[in-house]
Image 1 (cartoon, rainbow, N blue to C red):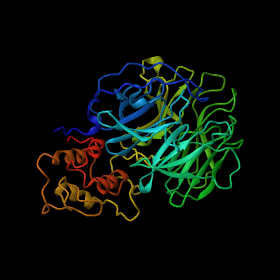
Image 2 (cartoon, rainbow, N blue to C red):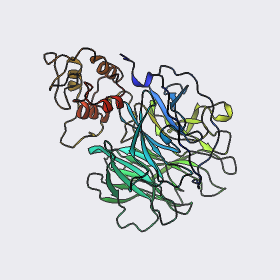
Image 3 (cartoon, one colour):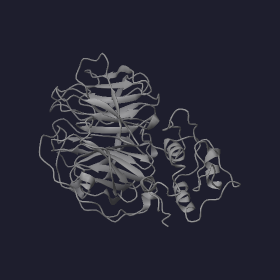
Image 4 (cartoon, rainbow, N blue to C red):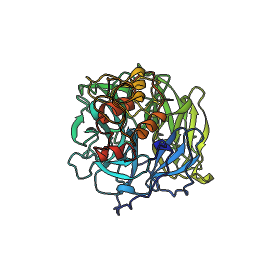
Length: 460
């Protein structure tokens, strides 16, 4: 039995990609060559980055930036334009596929996180509700997956914030910007500290844009949180994340050749403009970031795409000073990426996109129905003592602590649960990953549902 934590396992072989057709790419899209993979290591945590230059998801040591190879091999599952990345559960990676240069809509693909094996589609491009040009993606309560759809920027195929069931792929309807009369082409999405859903929205024109928000529980549109103006210079916003300081950080692009690509900072409570971090200089080669994400040490990680020598790098910013170091080298310096886009760490919350230094050190909303209790430190301790509620695999279920007096785990299966616990230290509070694990897999850990066991990266 393999007891190695999922992010420390070597990827296995992948499936070949189908052929694609050509069409028009977005303004910030580029096609470049990628470097060669290196041997995997044994990291404490990992960083995954979608690389549009060869349609892979690449893996890096989250502490050192060392390249560890491809988690998703080129074009696996038909991947053609990797965008949003999140872990639906501790072993299943969801990847938005924009299907660049194809006349088809986009889709959402499922991969086994430890092996990179393609597990099938969650949302098919043939679905009548498939997003046309999907970008960012987050997981909310009640198994709701939110996907920003950039549309076709033509006023005909308009943008959307589409909702799907994260377990079945069933379409749950769109979030509507009720009363808004401007262009609506959503890109990045995130669940804020207030529990609201935020989306970066661009215009058809290359200038302007908004940050909008909704109540995800009711679907109510709450209007613009940030409007573009001369002070903030918000243009074509995409990557969006709340920092440990509670403020909102947004990837924004230049208005013209005399402007800069930048990261904008807004007050997380009021939306007031606080400042910027320029990613390049006016008149010099561009170095823009399509996405951004906070990671270890409270640093802001920004993958760089553009037409300059920094293309393919991942910069690591101290947002208090605006300074950065090069975490992953650019392709010109031997780095492995040619067009890095969205990213996730192994310890990134799939809803708030916050980094969790160890699972449990910060609260996150329950991914199951609101009626489910959260996982506490006491309950987590109980999971390590034995099994309960008829489950033969260790977890007793969300809200039901186990004890040593309950039924012992079936021989040969306890190692899988032990490996998962070893990779996830005891929590101080509930986390989405733990809630999901206990609430929705407690009856499947004995191998009765092979598909779900594989999706968790378990040896069966």
